[in-house]
Each structure stands twice: as structure tokens, then as C-alpha cells.
Length: 497
Image (spheres, one colour):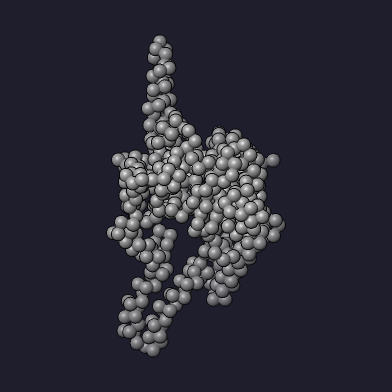
């Protein structure tokens, strides 16, 4: 039996892949329309007119087809204009009502940006665990709940143990695909910043005075090499389901928030055993105060130690968000004295192994906080079959078209075509299909050189994954990468991937 690590391939598949030379239908049609005057003038022999038409239409074609940071140039330009408008009109600046000295309701959330679309009603008590906070996404129409996991991590596990955890994760996602209520899972892992002051105080109080000098030097060396990167982690998992799937069973359970909570609880109760199979030693579903605390420590990592020392059921929703957040720059988001750089993590074409994302959590400097979020959506068997059929049809059409025009099939085309066939065969054999997205972020005190820490994170994962900086959307990227509220995957429109 082989004990080598299993390599997971086919992860770099794009949902909205282009049909013709990497272009989507809209891009291809716009390019053809803009090129038509040039072709007409050339066919009529008007060379000067064709040159002028090329100069006029060429920039338009470039706006449609030239990618800028993962987005077409026209889309990038539109986002840039909206970004600058938000700064000019003050839309992207934030100050909480409490920081402004206004009267506040402690139970009313006061959150910026993307978080304004969320509501946090408390559900009824779940067994003897007390009330669980529900997360209602009013834009996408989703309901979810978040749990804090006590987990020992995977850094010290053998390949065989990692393989078992990978199998358990696949089994969990397959379970979600066949459930009618919950279909998404978001896993957020954050390091807890430590300046070293707490550890230094403990050492000073417990150090033995008469130890040999060589032992003292060895202990200090260990502190420099190991202690600086030995950080605690906090792990959160969020499960959510769509309003469409919840509406009917919730009506049978009494309707309203409580009806939706009852339906969610039935599923969450069955998922706890699956989470323990993934190595979770304890699963704690968060109440409103607990979720507010998780959001608060996301915005202000320095408050984690204070809140942990005096934890009394979490914090009030009125102070869960940042006190102040200036208008974000194109590449950095600043909040409550911290600066965060967020990335989308792109999967490698050659595949990866279980646990390979751990390098993104390797803190290099005391006081730095790193976050990693993986968002999954398990497609139902019907949607999975529709998606793989569309992928196989698209790959086949492009292969046949190129052959008919005399173009040779490239290695990339062959890989896409064989991958589409293999994926369709796997789904036909009963395997599931999962959408996923990975985001990462690094946060440091605002006075630090945040670009240096961002560069270190990029270096830590270079050669294995590509980090795409979320320019012009750093505030939204922060929510995706740092906060355990289940936001991270856009709604899938249409049947294909």
C-alpha cells in the first residue's frame, strides 16, 4: 500500500471560462462588432480608413479583452471609477455610532460595508447549549450558523493521518450535497497575535536563578527561533443554506426565524459528529455575543487577549465592528489601528496536497495576524450533472472548431478536454462536485510597514500557489478572509461552471 501523499488535481477550473480564445460570449461579440468596420474598410480597399478605424476601435477591443488583475480592463475601469467616487463622496469612510458619541442600542449591530447586509437574530435554545445566533444574508437569501472549533491542527500529522482527514472532509462535503437544507461550509482559521509580552512575563516569574548559563543560552535561542512563530490559532466553521431550501420545512416547523432555526438545528446536530471526525476536539456553536466577539477580534486583533481574560458571554453587537475605518486605499484596508492586506488564493494547475495551505499561516513576526478562509459549496447531484455536461460540451465544441480551422490541439486544450470527460464520469459514478474559493489576509498594527509583511506572505507560498491581491476591494476581501460570517462565494447563476 502506498504511503505517499495524494495529489489533488483539477482545482484550477474556472467557473466562467471563455469559449473562444479565452473570451466569454459577450467579449467575443463586442470584439467582432468593433472589428467589423476595419474588415469592411479593408475589403473595400480603403487602407487609410482601415488604419483610422483600427486606431479608433483598437482601444475599445483592448478594454473588453485585456485582463487587469483578473478582471477585463473595462470592468476594472468601472470599479476604479466607483472606488474613486466612494472616496470623493465619503461613502467608504466609516465611524461607528458609539465612537461618534451617539446613543446606541447594545443589541443592534453597527457594522460597515458588506456586513450591513447581514442580520443576526437569535434562534431558540439548541439542546442544553443555549441560544445560537443565526446569520441571515439578506442579499443572497441565506441562513447560517457559526461554531468555534477546538482543533490541534494538521502540522504534526503523518501523511496517512492527513489522508484520513482529507477523506473525512470529502465525506462531509458529499453529505452536504445530498442535504436539502445546508449546502455551504466556510472554514476560517486565524492566528492570535502575540507580542511576546505575556510569555516574557511568565518566563520572568518562573525562571530559576541558579540554572547553568549554557541552559539559559539554549532557552533564549529557542525563544528566538521557535517561540516567535509558535502562535495560537482560532478556528471557525459556518454552515448555511438558501432561503428557497428552508422556506417549506421552516413553514412546517412554525415559520419565521424560529422555524428556520429548528430546521437548521436538525442539520447542525448531525454535522457535529462529522466535524469531530475531522479532528475537532470540541464544537461550540456561537451565541450572538460569541459571534459579535469573533467579529470584534477580527477587526481589532489586540482586543483578543482582553476579551479572553474577561469573557462573559461575548460582547454587545453595538461594539462588534470597528470604531473607525478610513476610506480604504486600493491595496490596503485600515481598521481600528490595524492594516490588512487580503488576497484571493489561486490553485495551481499541477494540483496540491492536503495541508499545503498551512504556509499562509506561518507567522514571521510577533504581533502579526494571518488568516485563511476556505469557502465550499456542495452542488446537488442535479446541478453537478448539469455543470459537468456544460463543461464537456464547451471543451468538445472548442476542440472540434479548432480542428475544422486547421489549428493543432495544444497540451492545455487536451488537458481541459480530458479533465472535463473525467469529471463527468466521476459525477456519473456518484461523486460530488464542489465549488470553492480560498482567501488569505495578513494584519499588522497600522504603524508597521504592511507592504513588507504582505511580501513575506507572498514569499511563503511562492511556487505553490498564486496570490491575487484584491485591489479596489480590500474591505470586502477582509470580510471574506477574516470574519466567520459565511461570505466568500458569489451566487452561482445558471447551470454551468
